[in-house]
Image (tube, rainbow, N blue to C red; front, side, top):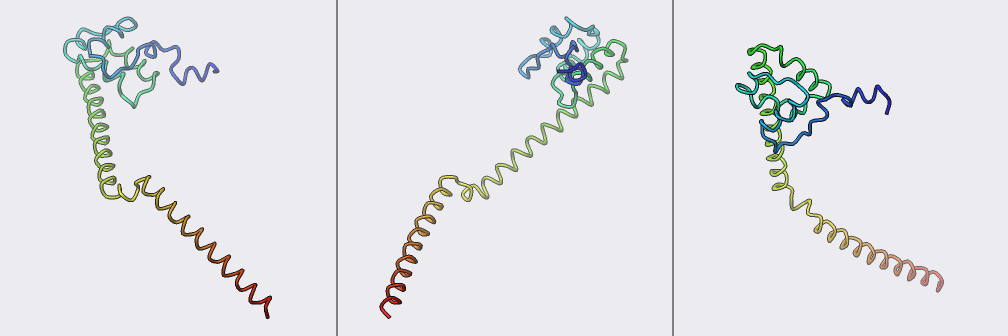
Length: 153
């Protein structure tokens, strides 16, 4: 891994030392992150979910997390509130997309599930192969009969 590669994947960033785990509470994230960053009292008291949102968002890489955690102490309450709203909105939108996708997949499964039943497909394939083999045997027999008739002429 080159030095450029390590910069791209966030290696060397303190934010990459924090383990992302959706089962962690807001407080657990804050406690872990405070080992590396200053978490303003305002964030702990008014926006306790912000640190968790930063780490669990899918739209940030390690460098972006590093950036936001570093500037958090100098942000105004309004900036923090807007930043949090953006992350919450993103999380809600992604959750809605996931739900829509799951619903769509269930609808497709209901509509086409029988057609895509793997065991049924294998059974149909085996039946077709059996019919094809029987047909080939019949053709070979017919061919042999024709050749016999030609020889008898």
